Length: 141
Image 1: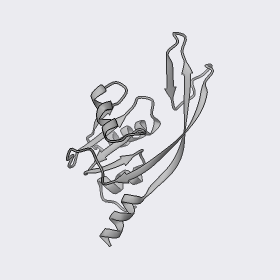
Image 2: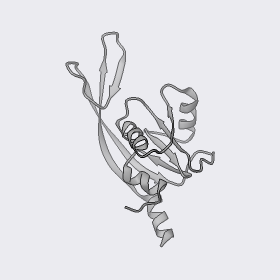
Image 3: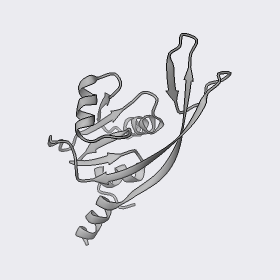
Image 4: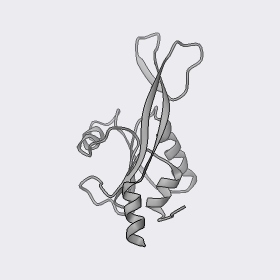
C-alpha cells in the first residue's frame, strides 16, 4: 500500500494557468507581476505552470529543511511563503533573480519555473497546499 502511495506521489502533477503581466515603467525598466497595475498599459502573458512532486532533489541531502527557489513577482511563491509563515514552517528562500549562486543551483537542478521547493528529500515544482502537505507532513488528503 505504501509503495502505491509513493509511486502515485512521484508521478502525479496538476496543471494550472497563471496570468502574468508585463509592463515597462517610465524609466524604461521592464517589470513582471501577477497583478495588473492600475492605469498602465500591460501585456497579459498566459503561462502554463504545474505542480509536480518527485524524489529528485539537488545533490545535497536536505533532510527536514524546506528550501524554496523563487522570484519576487511569482504568485505561487507568495502563496508558498504565506503558507509557510502561517504554519510556522521554517524555510530558506533563494531569489534566483537576485542571487547568482541560487540561479546556478536552480539551473543545475534543471529548474524551468518557480517556485522549486525542496523538502524531506523531495522536490516540488510549483506550489499547492495539498501537494506540499503530502511531502512534508506525509498527508494523503
